[in-house]
Length: 298
Image 1 (cartoon, rainbow, N blue to C red):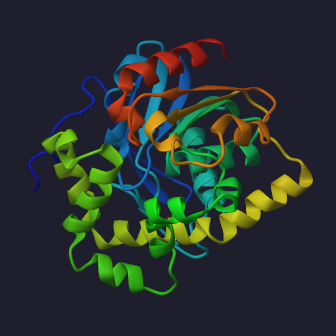
Image 2 (cartoon, one colour; image 1 turned 60 degrees about the vertical axis):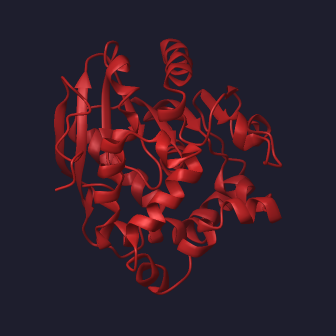
């Protein structure tokens, strides 16, 4: 067992261990008050929220699952593909099991993509939505240029059909993961060794690597179609939206995040955050204060 795997990153939280929507969800749950669902990104697990969840739990019930297929959350019945629509349905089933009819959703990276799909498909369930470092998939693909392609080459590698990415990732999972995280964090030394152990341990599992590839394949196909259909029909997020983005990343982006999200929601606020891509870990104090103000207003 990797050294960090047995570490308790969420003292005072209970373990989340529930079957819902063809997923055996694992993660943590704690606190009391209005519910907030925290969704992590690629290539991480729920412990990405270790600096955010404990403080939010002072005023909210905080649910922190591993996304379906990621970390320790295992999926069953992997056909049809786990699109963001299917992930959103499973998350709604999870919240049903926990007795939460209406809740806030905070997502980072891939979790933000599942989160906005949840808000679009289940508008009566989502009281507020926060996106960290993400613009909608439709807009992201529409703005691809050389800079984006070189920086986010994994979008296109992981989305390749068949099992070629899985076979290549199996050759040296740690080397791939370390390279990805080092780029996101601005250096591997910026990631706590205990945390890196957990991320490596998860990524060493071939089922997790396959789920990640399927996540990106869905983004380039079904998820994109679902976004395009909603855009054509004029469907928008009915809830308030908070958008946080990395100052460092935005310098290389071609579309301002607030401009992108204003096409998808009427009530959008947000700000740039100093730091890199891993905002919940890189700039937790700024993220936390922004989330607390946003969630207090709902």
